[in-house]
Image 1 (spheres, rainbow over the protein chains, first blue to last red):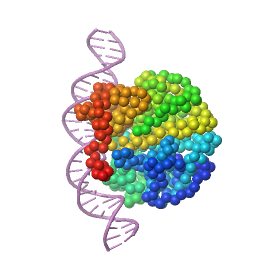
Image 2 (cartoon, chains in turn cyan, yellow, blue, orange; image 1 turned 90 degrees about the vertical axis):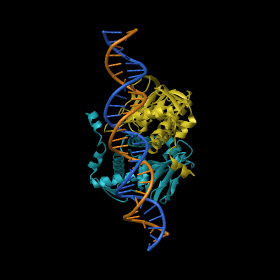
Image 3 (tube, rainbow over the protein chains, first blue to last red; image 1 turned 180 degrees about the vertical axis):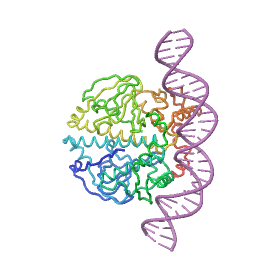
Image 4 (cartoon, rainbow over the protein chains, first blue to last red; image 1 turned 120 degrees about the vertical axis):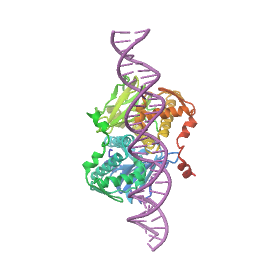
Length: 225
Length: 225
DNA sequence: CGGCAGATTGACCCTCATCAATCAAGGTGG
DNA sequence: CCACCTTGATTGATGAGGGTCAATCTGCCG
């Protein structure tokens, strides 16, 4: 999964932007609200949630410090889903009006915005690959690996971190039920791949975790040969 | 599912562009190829395919006449997957270099490009909702409804059309096996929702097809109440 | 301390994948 | 024009993976 909206703060900062604190559980923006800004996450983390007409809810991503959120609103006049803080967080709100105008005069900024949008497309496509072609164990492994990489990219430890979201939210992202998420985390622990204690994750063997993806899939091996 | 890249030809046309014919089964572009252009589909249809390192293949979308394809390459220097013609087709190749430069002088074009990218994000998020929260029958129903809407938007019949892709390709998009796709289409026919004959689809009752989504899901009804 | 949200674990069952046989439709070459 | 082959679709039988229901357990916050 790509790391959308990463490292763009310097460029975005030129459009100004005001700090804002969001407490755990609060909405950064909501479905249908007037689109007016992008948000650079300075501290904390968020989940992005898509809501369908018939009451279905789908977590479309988790976003941590250093990433940008709110891109989906650009096309329409309103945000297409909710963004909720998973912990007490802080963002810089970047008015899109100004960003848009500035981009017209700054080719580098224009290109940076294109890139952020394209990266988000990439990120979602790889999630589609996960949802469309992986079994439960593989999904969890892919999730943990991706999170680990992003934590490292942000200067945190890559092999020991806190999950800021519930099992249910992880399940929603991955198309699994919370019980399945819980069971598989336990199984990974029994197999010595990770250590779990509630929200705390320690990755014991990253190579082993990687090898989960593709195991039990003899066909692919044969095809590759 | 949103209808990404629709109706943008007029604006895009200002960047020039050359016609190109692509025969059924031929690649419009391939994974890793130098990114240089977007493609407006003038006639025919394509599938976009994502390939993972371990040999997995995931269809990320089908695109028909009037839509734009190739957006995923914008961020990086290369295309992130393959685009394959599902039938003999024709596209207008729009060099991105020129588009990019023109956008800097044309706010309307810049905004149109932002919108196309954001629409694609939307489209993929709704597909994530399908993949993450729907059962097989619901996925197929959502697929047919979406296709029907897009056909109508392009001036074709909304209740009678040809599937240009195989059952296996539909399955790949929806995270199902080809046998499941086949079985469910047969079931829909038995129930009088549609008529199928190979690639030919006739939607007999759109309301009934819509009601497939959400049925067997008593919980949601209760929650909604 | 009590209450509650979240997590774990077990038992059961259903949907969908898998394996396999058959059928239909095109394309090709004789 | 027909026999042959290939590709795609249908249908059946069977079983596994993960959903569902339910009982506990844990940690946290008031």
